[in-house]
Length: 173
Image (tube, rainbow, N blue to C red; front, side, top):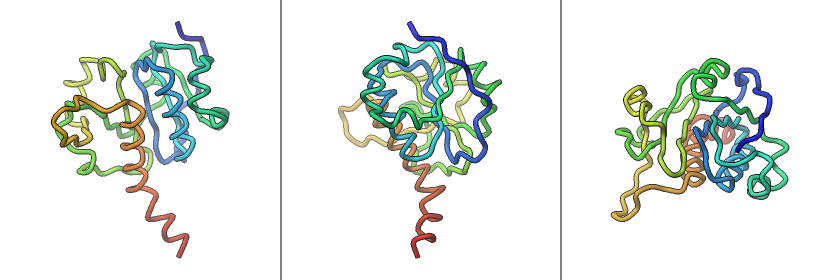
């Protein structure tokens, strides 16, 4: 279902944030998240299986002409990601998270991990990474979850705000 691409070397230490999609299913979401990553200067890692081919026109259309600027790595599975990407601090976004996104402190080099659209993170992650589970507050009574691309944008921009916004404001003064 997904095409074979070379797997990149470990994530560069100069990138302030890393986004990881575990088993993404919808090409539009991956394309939109890729575009957000380009806007923020983040790397995007995809962990197989993918529910689409990376050459899919919907991925490219959602990323528009930004896709060529996206630092992208594709991994065969979670263990392959851990071994090759060597992430430092990871935050796992989930509706099952006990800590709010806004009570989480982000630092340069952090990795934000998102699960698939239909089932979230793989079941073993909820126990293995319990202390790193983070949720986006949803005070509305009828929403079960947010769209993956929206959730990734919210979380990545909050992390960016904490890490980079002050630095850029100082540059503008």
